[in-house]
Amino acid sequence: MLRIHFTVEDITNTRMLATLGPMAETAFALYLFGRNGDIAFHQWRRSVRAGLGKDAARYTALSQQFRTLYELPVAFADAFTQSTDPTHEASADVRRSTELLADLCQVAVLPHWPMIRSNLDGAREAWGRVAIAHGVERLLSSIHPKVRWRSPVLEIRHGQKRDIHLDGRGLLLCPSFFLSEQSCAFLDAVGENGVPALVFPVKAAAQGDFWGPAEHDEQALGALVGHTRAAALEALAEGCSTGELADRLGISLAGASKHAAVLRRSGLVTTSRNRNTALHALTPLGKALLRRCEPFVAPAPRALANGVPQQRVRPLRLGGVGAGVARQAV
Image (cartoon, rainbow, N blue to C red; front, side, top):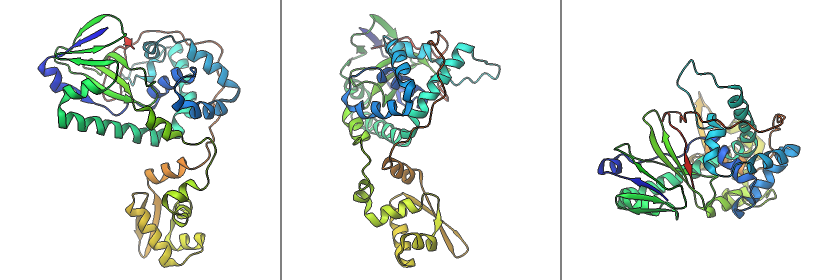
């Protein structure tokens, strides 16, 4: 059992981060990809296998070579690293492992990243409300079934038997979309100040709802916003004026203006003016919604080299947070 000892200062310095970033999420996704559990990810696995094509078997084999989560930040150091040292030059092994993970990221994570990031932001806000309403101690006691708060000690069950004293540094808490529901990961130190981090999964129900049905449902967007406004959203994918929108939809200028206004109030469209012409374009939320209702077409990854990147322990830096080393996961 891992035991993390808190002081009053540590409670004050504990804070929440939304995500470690898409590459770190891809490292967790790789670990999940080669294992058949977690029914919430079955549809995601099918789409990733289709996107990877003949390389799917190689990524499955690579995934199964990692026995525990703590090996990921070791093998894929740059997934958790954004060096601030201008003289830093990664080794050939680290560059190769980064390329491997970047290829998987293009297929498995980035096509869904706007919705994943929105989900992680929501998780951070929800847990933040728990901390505000009931205190950090309540947050620590309810964040994961393997984590138990026994003031002033946070216990992580089924981990290596260790005692860690935070010594006023606090703890960084971070949700992950691709961690298994049964897993959470403790990182000894992230950031230039060496702040320990606890990464925990978002709820499986949210993950299952996220992927939705395997087949493309052409009526899904229309059921959500109405068929005419769904058509307007698609017509605005490349941006256009109100007049052009009316022409594309075959409706009146007043009708096109009304639909654009409703989409704008919903946060799906932005409108700018050039003299007497209103120009409409999708917001990131509008693009994400439109993308969510389109068939998934994955970009082709680069060919994989044979073999597995050598595992090397390197400092773990998180962009904007700093440096540290990943040591333990449960």
